[in-house]
Length: 76
Image (cartoon, rainbow, N blue to C red; front, side, top):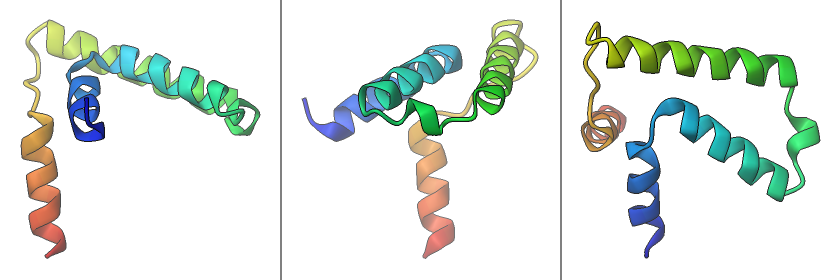
């Protein structure tokens, strides 16, 4: 599996799962003490809120590939 494939798979995960994975990776890298836990908690709650909004059909998601294409185009 390439890094790009792994990244695409991670972007398919719900936001709360992405946040948990990020926290685990940072912990594994020994950087967890550099994360402000209050800020991490707020971001986690926001990710859960956004995930619920999408689950309820109140907002539609945009595929990651489309988002990255837009960003790349705006940087050129």
